[in-house]
Image (tube, rainbow, N blue to C red; front, side):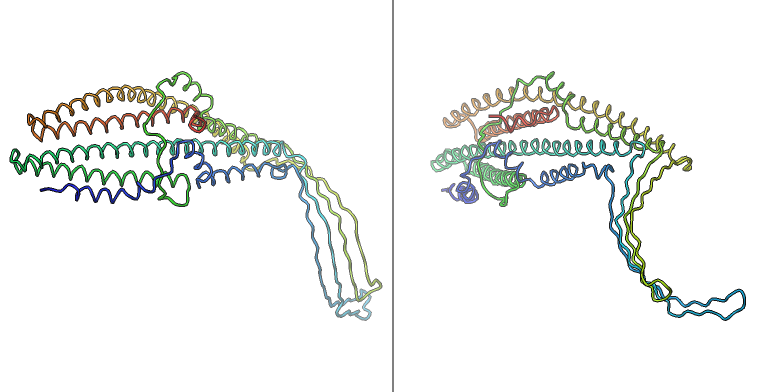
Length: 444
């Protein structure tokens, strides 16, 4: 007699660690919260944003002067021969030593350079905004990715349940075949076919465990936890989506707050500031420099033994570049072309977003309809299997036809899961492109 327990045992042993360890239940909000705190990519993005924030200072823009301190020591030894013009005796001096010690504080300050400093400060502020938008974009992408992976984990867990149910049905069929084989009402071929189908379902279940395990590891990695193999259960037991999303609200929101679009607009502003920076060369510049110095001399010859000089020195430089090889004109012309390119890129970004939105919305609507269709198909497949099993128990249906009904039921369950998951993915994409992806974090 065929013992099905020896076929079930490997599956139970394989799933046992998961069944024992998967005690923690975690929902989507908690997954996102942990990920936002621990994800390494987001930490890097926030550090980059902090660098942009730190750069917005008057000193970095050029508003403030530079002050330096300098000092030095010089030693000079000379040998001198002086020949008088009247032909008298040559005057010779040997080892004439002069030692000099000096120290001073100097200041350099660009007072005016064609509004370059003011423009540079505005540019640093815009770069700070770009850093914030880049972090926001990284957060939005992360929420979208981890939400998609969370529901993929839910999907794979549901597939696991479907395969367990399919294995249970195959086990029941095998029990019936074994009983009938013992009394001679079924052939050995029927028994072997039932065993083959049971083994096939066991194999699918084992493979599905691997898929589920990989999804859990990926989710742990995205959350940034230390143990990527830690077990948990998803709080969601179904893949639900919002069928009431408004196309007009999503579309208008996309044009107002889409982060990629805002970044394209910021890049255009930066190009305009670059032109102003180049135009600053059309103006004269005014620079202030000052120094307060002290110098001490030591002599070993002559009538003066020591000498000290100290006091301030102040100077102003006013200048204007008359000709620089037409470089100024070239730079400004290129800056205007860059502005035009940024405008074109902005329009291209809008068109791409409109195209992506149209495709997403159509796919979202189609998958909602497909989900409803697959629900109906699943109901029919369940009724069909129940009828087939009743007829099989009465001996009015072959094992092959029962297997077809069983496979049709499993396929209907899997198709429904696929349709629900695809609908959820398009919902995620629509909320992301419209700047509303954060709703998954605030949803109750």
